[in-house]
Amino acid sequence: MTDSPLLIVLTGLPYCGKTTLGRGLEGVGADVVELDRINRERGFRIEDGVPVAEWGETIRRAEVRIAESSAEVVVLSWVNPTERDRQRWRDFAGARGMRCQVVYLAADQELLDARRGAAVAGPDRHVLSDEVLQRVQRRFQPPAEGSAVVLEASWSLEKQLEVVTAGL
Image 1 (cartoon, rainbow, N blue to C red):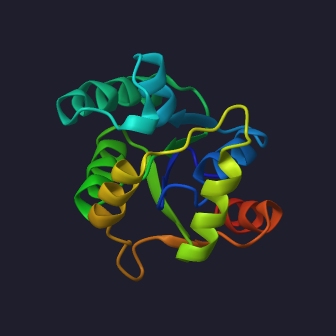
Image 2: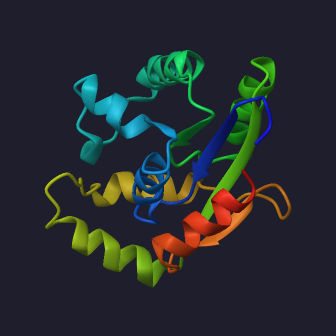
């Protein structure tokens, strides 16, 4: 481990396992900042989407939580749909003397659909409306080759954690 803290930016489509991986990393000492959680705290129903005008405040709150963390590893969990979004977090980390690693959870549509169906039964899960899900899927750009650690969403949590923590 180096002296500078690490910001791990989790990216991937809804239902790929960002929350699960974040919680796994939390279990090994990382602080986790979930934009969905911040939006729920702000009173928004994730299922229906968050108004575009409100995302600035959600991101500002995430920045504050990351900056105030004393953990060696902070995980930002959000779809981070575009390269521009991911670059913004790289710049944010760099300006604070943090290292940054983007981690992309790649999943095929069949797996995403199955997990979305299973989310209905989960007590702390939300199911995005078809409209919101389609909007996110249309906007999402997978990271360019070499710009992220790529994990298969179908891998076990243990294997995902092993790959992510190997670079710490």
